[in-house]
Image 1 (cartoon, rainbow, N blue to C red):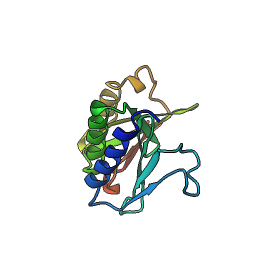
Image 2 (image 1 turned 180 degrees about the vertical axis):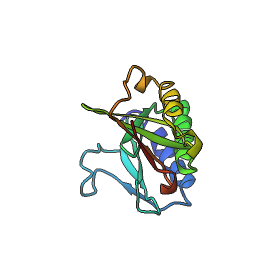
Image 3 (image 1 turned 45 degrees about the vertical axis):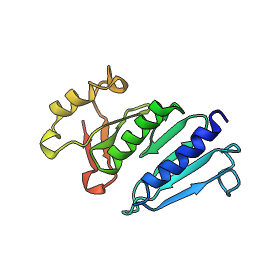
Image 4 (image 1 turned 135 degrees about the vertical axis):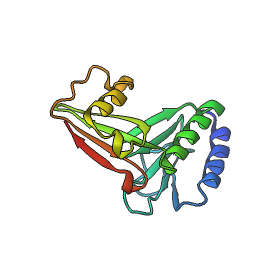
Length: 159
């Protein structure tokens, strides 16, 4: 594994940042985590509402998982900082996951939590089309789910 000392130090730093949350740390030695290589770990942050948990894989890169979405970050200071910022934005509910269910596939991205007044077709389209993942998508007969750490912010809209 590249940057083994760096990622080990960042694992400890990450667990310290998450000290206010219930976390689980797993390695390749744990049952069900044989997809990890030696030196890699998988941290799960348990959602207190027993909804979507958040997970981080620390290996050749940092990978953040939430609500069907995931993103990889470089194993350097810039990548770690970017991942921590996304992690904190999800946990403080300023960011959520947009899941757009299309006929043949689903697309995901992360974006700001939308208020109820922003939940009309025109405003949602304007917001979605600012993301490369959704450019050129025809919003007909599709479902948009907003998945947030606090379930009170979860929403579903159909077009």
